[in-house]
Amino acid sequence: MTQKTIIEKVLKILENHPLCGNCLGRLFGGLGRGLTNEERGKALKILALMEIHRRLIEDWENTRKKALKILENIGDLAKPLYQQYFLKELAPKTCSICGKRSLNNLIEKYAKESVEVLRTLDARTFIVGVKKGSNIEAREEEIIRKYDLKYYESIRNEIKREVGKKIQQLANIPVDFTKPDIVLLIDLENNKVDPIIMPLYVKGRYWKKGRMISQSIWILRNGKKKYLLSIEETLQEIAKILQGERAILHASGREDVDARMLGTGRPMIVEVVKPKRRRVSLKELEEAVNKVSPYVEVRLEGEAERKDVRLIKMEKAKTTKVYKALIIVDKELEENDLRKIEEFFKDKTILQQTPRRVLHRRPNVTRQKKVYSVKTRRITKNVFEALIRCEGGLYVKELVSGDQGRTKPSFSDILEASARCIELDVVSVQL
Image (cartoon, rainbow, N blue to C red; front, side, top):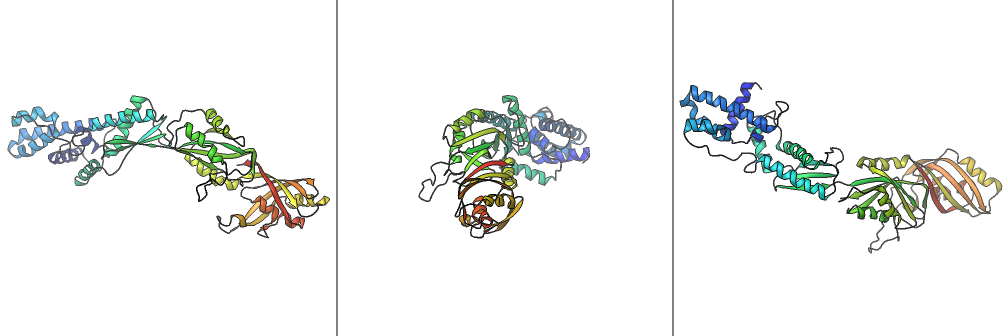
């Protein structure tokens, strides 16, 4: 686009549309560097004014009708020339795009409202968005199409940028484009700011020191809880302190409800939905959770991100876990029985069909899992303890029992007797 065509485009637009400096400048927003749209629009109006003046001087008769329209649509800058040639006061017109609401006034209004929202919600970072589909945006797009404009910037983009800059001036709160605390969604159609409170993610580990404690809250059809306590329930203390709607637990796998989680604890991420507070120490949150029950303990390590939730769920199958199992056998154990278990299950691949006890909620598939080592200790004539180091996702109870042939090989196979896990503890989860 040459200088001549820029002036011609501007004159054609201003012949049919009164535009404020912001809206005219934005139609050519991709041209020039270091200029605001208001500065760009003013410069274009000055160029148009100079060109109209030249035409009026050189060809009054053929220029005056078109010049009258253009000068009226330029606005205040054209007042002296308008009065000189048409001998009357120029009446101001409203902008064809932003209308009676001056864009600068809108930016100021939205910035001030946003600052109040950010302070109320204890926000540390923010980002500005603008809702699509407003009439203002439609009017702008119509002009862009009509005059085949290629170097425009959208009104949504200008408002996002300018409101963001103004907020930082007023409140000294930084923008974060990747993980903001609050998304300030500006609704041009209804002239308001809607805050979207982003979740807060906290990473850590939990220990379950008692049995019959579920990981998630388990509600029965009658509305009652199946178990008296769950890990997720204790984490609601975090949501209370942060004034969030609720806390959601994302963990690297899960242990059975009757198994304890000891040793290194289980890696987890706590997602707090719509927290209105954020500047709270991890120690305060940790202490509040650990007061709920002597059977549940958590340690919080720091903030996480949404992507970490996906990672922790993806990595649960890649974990190495160590279990401590108390096993009863329906025969008296001989001296070499436990040694056979230890030797046989060294780096052994196990084929497991989905256990019968979880078939109602899991697809019936056969998976390969690895047992790396087993260490045993005899307790009584038919009871022993086994420390099992294995790949994450292995069903340990079925490794012991064989699950009627659905897991092969199993402890029952090697012992040539029925073996059953009567107590199970997870003592290590290594990502």
